[in-house]
Length: 150
Image (cartoon, rainbow, N blue to C red; front, side, top):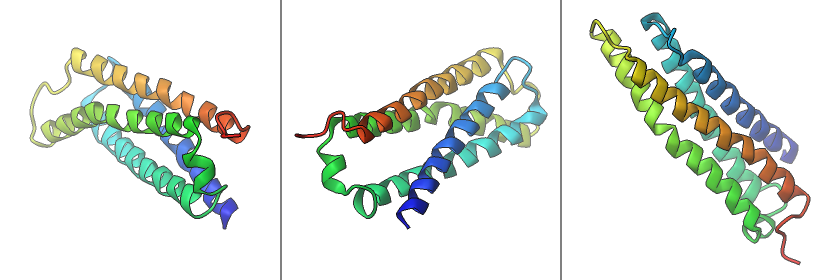
């Protein structure tokens, strides 16, 4: 069961990366109103992947894995968790923008996509991707004993 939870944790993190990369690729000046429902769906998948990553991560810390003492006594673990939380908090801004676009599209508004809003959403998603890239580094360092109490 430990291996299955670890596998689901890794898959969840890969799905987070894939959805964020998809959002980044969609949020260009070529973005058209017909793409908005796709963007909203990808963002929902991102949310589900983040929930799965959090759930499996908690299982790894408290039920499986190396035990709470290993993780909770390691400062690198807190860096990893802080990065995950930062990515989640930053994601609020583009998510709200995607929801506004989707709502405006459904209500039949004419000009829903403004270049400045697209550029802003893309910047936030890019920042999420950049921070997300640091999470596996923290995981690898932790697994190698960096930060472990001697």
